[in-house]
Length: 342
Ligand code: NAI
Image (cartoon, rainbow, N blue to C red; front, top):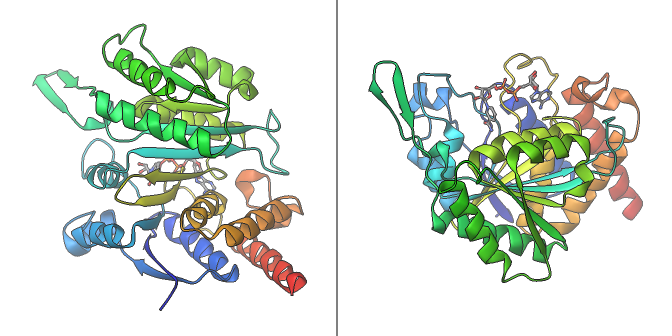
């Protein structure tokens, strides 16, 4: 029996390409995983009549861990986002995105090391929208004391256990006095229990400007769902874009590890997709299941490969290689390391 049983959702677009690459790399790293693989999204809808079949949810609840590729969401019509449904159904309330500068990925700033924590379950993502009369639509923002306190606890506890010094709550409480005001007051209350962590706050528009002008002033950012969605993409851009950053959705029922980027239909099936973001998520997953040594080896291999020739990197991060080249380079780095260790 394999040491770990993990649910695998390859998704669509570039999803199957990047997940296949990451599965191959984890195998090269010698991690003993049995994957339970399922279709989600339009493929699952046409095969089983549901874009997120119950057996997928059951598998994640059983295994407690899933690795997920991106899934295309129809715009305007069609089924609700699989990502939003997964997060809400499994109550994966914390979205965690470490954002770090990578070797050889040229960006405006160096030495960026930020952690973005986003509340995943409410806000304008509650899906409470209706047409009042033709031409007028209402979309309801829900903020609760329970969810705000829970995400604040997650952020401060993460800061505590990972040696972080400061948590900045990001909001628009000057305008949305009740909703964002509640979020901010919950964060402040939780902060009182963590006197050794500096707690401050920024209005979201100012925060975006500061992130672009002087990102190194921040350590951890704590945001509601919508601001978190937008700001986390901004921070990904600071270190090289959506192909570089990993992400985890964590709750009491389980954890789903996925890349920040979407299904990239413009490059799907062309062997151009960068598996790095999903690989960074997989490293977070290895740490989550206690495979610390394997996670460290994969991280070392990433640094080594990014630090070498452009033929080992994909085009989105300035390389001349493709998905297969990157995957082979990481596997080679892992094998060399293993042989050197023997
Ligand atoms: P996208 O992230 O798919 O693409 C934006 C741009 O980044 C494109 O030019 C794409 O080629 C590039 N890109 C993204 N990932 C890349 C990678 N790994 N390697 C190289 N280049 C990469 O965003 P877009 O176009 O807004 O969304 C496409 C679809 O993905 C939509 O249906 C959207 O709903 C869905 N989506 C799914 C997500 C998920 O499943 N977690 C997250 C975000 C979007």
